Length: 223
Image 1 (tube, one colour):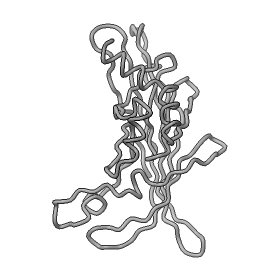
Image 2 (image 1 turned 180 degrees about the horizontal axis):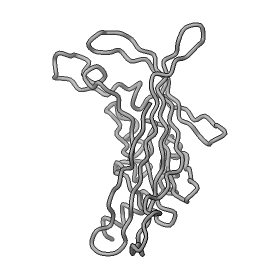
Image 3 (image 1 turned 60 degrees about the horizontal axis):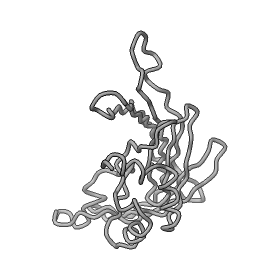
Image 4 (image 1 turned 180 degrees about the vertical axis):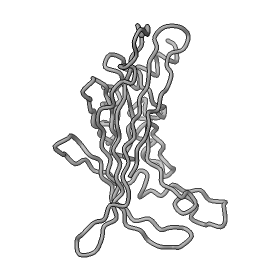
């Protein structure tokens, strides 16, 4: 069995869902209007998988520790940073968030309240939303900042839909739009929106020739 076939089998959405459920990390599979399938892992607030409507091979890199239940349990029990793979949310400036001993540069640390965080799933009229509430201590100012991160996914139309006279036989597409919001809880029960962004991500799968896939990251918009 080839490496490609092995990875495709282990990281197919149904198998990953069962493996992670058995390891105590349930997932949520979202199907967009064009049939693209997006596998959400609330633990870490990640888009762990992206699949075309007809192909179970994941467009995203996935940590091989998630291939079996036993390995996944051992991975999640570790006190090291648990980089499961997929699409994650990273904050900047990096010096304030990931260098806790700045100006010393000898320690790079992923705040556990950010990743994996404590994401929960909220049901909304538009689908599911991942929400993480956390407090970060900024390295330079030593200020403590309360923050709420919200993430949801929606459809991202195939950019090749506008092409005319192009041979796209054997070409498949999967994509999604990720809506991310950063909210700072205010006083008197009020909240203020610090920032929001919508990012479109799409991937093209080519089944002909030696190249299995190419990537296309669609434009991002932020407010």
